[in-house]
Length: 105
Image (cartoon, rainbow, N blue to C red; front, side, top):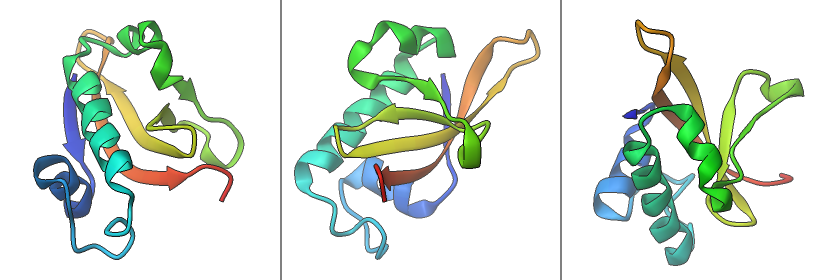
């Protein structure tokens, strides 16, 4: 899957494991490590349907206020939110990562 980062902070977290962005600099180290692992899962997936096979991700299409947003679990407390889009053949293979969200906050 093609991965793009909406913010520099998310890209820094992925590439270096830390960021100076106030939203993410206080994330626990285990969450950052798991975030990198989840992004690697997304990169390895050929299409969005491949994410259903990785049960620990708990992939879901959000509804309500987040209608149209995709989400996967980083851990039981944090979610990685992204927008997915299809390629020219209609298969969803592009993901724009835009937020690490603390669940229920």
